Length: 307
Length: 200
Image (cartoon, rainbow over all chains, first blue to last red; front, side, top):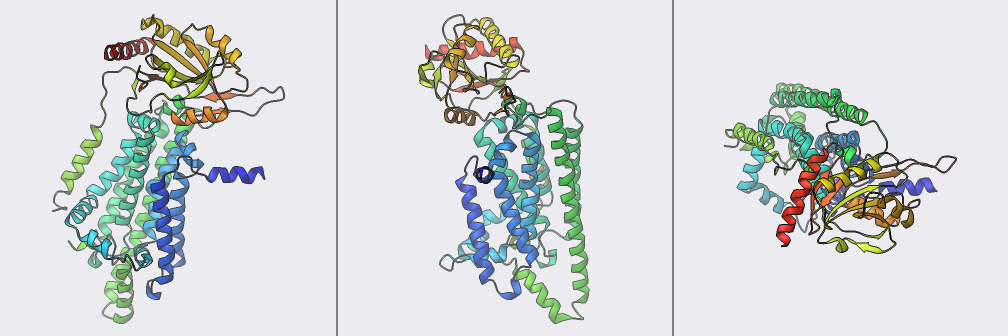
């Protein structure tokens, strides 16, 4: 009984965020509704559904349970939190390509028209185009990791509640932007912002500096982040051991996510070339498949790709 | 257009991230506007209920610990006593608030005897678990009480941070064990002098 109570207590938020709670609840409700309304041709596979739900759940778990407290007081758990916020969670959500389902889940009273209008605003298109530029996206992705891990900034982020939230939100939003750009299921000719080849290069190039940052932390013999010693660790652990594990988490699983992304992209590239070659021979089925994938992103961030 | 200016924007972001660090010439850690102001409601080592309001007009140094702590806490408090002397806060305008994270063992009487040894400007504070947790949560510090052994003894671990608040109760500095005593004294003097000037 005590064990159950303790587990339930662990699942309660340490610092409740109404914005994050609302964002997760709305995303969950829209996806759930959308699954019942989306036409059979656009129904996502079981794998894509699992990817969406687990990505969302992971993000919620690391930000709105007692895990959040632990990651404020243990460097390697903080690195695990950021691995979920910047890599794993957004990666899974982007992999599930959820926009068609989310759009179908919007109540008819509201409709998708307001979102489409917002999307067509010049400011939205220019801003999104800049953030998702082939040079900006990887610099921002790696730059944010480097920025929040610079000793002085890291110290302040762990001391200040508001700054801590800015840090975590920036990682989550940038993670979503980056992986949506990288894992767009469409080839460039169907509206993706970048071709598969360019995306493979970017995803692998963005991996290298992260490996360097991770290795630097993992091999450091100096306590780089003394904020954990100053404010107290969640439990007793040798500071250098904590830092060593944290460095390894920054280095290896993060790099693996980039390798997995590159493999997925190589597979999609090969398939898209086969589809292209096969179009003249089996026009009907291939065209039907292609339009189904297109439709899946009709209202999505793919739109400015035409620009 | 987005495509053409992409490299420029990327370079700008990199520069922005690189130049984000600055400091105001403090030798210890500046926490102005980062950490919330002094606020608590606890019991002092004479058994009186006190709140942050009672210390307005004084520069306060807030830290956490427990009286059975033979090593770190005593060293830190002794160092702070030395810092106060060195910063020439000879008058009555500084207070060191030592908050017990082990209120079960640290009664007011125990606290009184413990803090007295460091001088009249040292105050022991204690409260129930809820009051203590509210305070540690406010300053984002942790403490843990270990499992008691057969003799009922247990390990306590806690934050080593010393938060410095000015006369208006605003958080100004954070002293950590790596700060040299003369750096702490110099910065403390600066906070005392400037907030005395502002008050006068």
